[in-house]
Length: 569
Image (cartoon, rainbow, N blue to C red; front, side, top):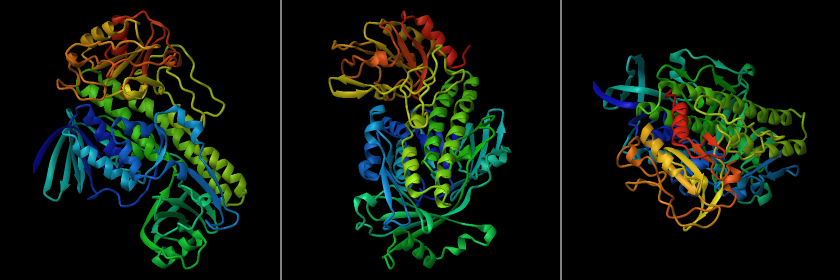
């Protein structure tokens, strides 16, 4: 039997597992990903990528590649309802791009999961810290004093894998979760579903009948655009209690369903695949058992209404990776890992609940309790969900409260109110530099980041805090008016997001510099709630850890904040 030692073993090679491997590798952690499938998904599955996930892809340098593989925002961020795609009662409503777009340097996007996984796999495999094994099944695992020992089986034989931590991203029917005896909480399954992927030329449909998602009533189903060319998918259901089963969906039955949904008898159609699945809404009772962590659908399953499931799982991976890295590198206490469940489980529960609310709108329409006009108004309104995907805040010992209350918008699902209150995602603000516009989010990387007004005096204390803690820290000054670039570090350290030649925890690379010259914004400090001497400390996952509204600059205060956030006290 072969043997392999890695720091983290990731089980599951879908989007969540691949993102976990990518983010761990960015932190310099050795990671092995094992996936029982021999290749990436051949089925579209998830399609919607929320604004927050797009921000992560932007930070990884693959936003443009994903957008080339997906569908034009302007044409397909829309929802429709009707008896069929060609029926006279069909109505369509598009997302409010102008309303939400200012909240981020990017915006929600549609890219089918089969294409997204190819891009993520390529990125994961490009990292020297990561091994990616498709066609590999974990057949057993046990916790040990040093972490986890697992047996992985693939074509060339068995491998004994020893790791400090294991991340289970093995889906809604997680074998890892079952082996750990972790229960799930939620209502009974909402329905037994069938996805029919097909190819057809629907170019005859006018623009006002093209939508990312259309809910149809005759027969009851949903039609999804997979690309903006020829690939489409129908979601329909069956009832086992009435004798229905996946076997009912023969090619002839699928062709009939597609033609009825489009409303064109005899339409040339090629059936590409049929996949049964269970529509459900559930959350695992625990997200951790010793050295094993659940992420993605292994931890929570949302209905597909809203497109939240994959995105929520990717945020799990992003939240967990930096914490595992900090503990593995000895810069954080083991207690930091307890904040993973404390932070992510409430967000997951809320996300699952909101997906259920979206599904109920569809059920009400299908069962005649809502007219199609009422349904489209509600569905279109629920397509705008920046409050849910950007506005959440964490509450744990990895966040130091500053006494300010959280925003309280009238509609916390739709409305995002930017805030740099500790626990919340650092707000996007456009800055002006020698190379053009840059977002505050572009300054963040796989390390802590300190943002402060130019002249506030924080570079020196930041360097001292980095030296005392051994924690990688990038400090950036932002001016309210045009100034000269301010160098704030020795040894020419890497720019935000670049790898360090000395290692992630080496104090020689602890403090960064203003990228390529001065950064200017007359409003950013006000938007971050800072006075002339204030500063904000942002975690590697882009959430604010600590805020000093108005100084004075202090290495002692910053060092204490870092120690508390990293459970070192």
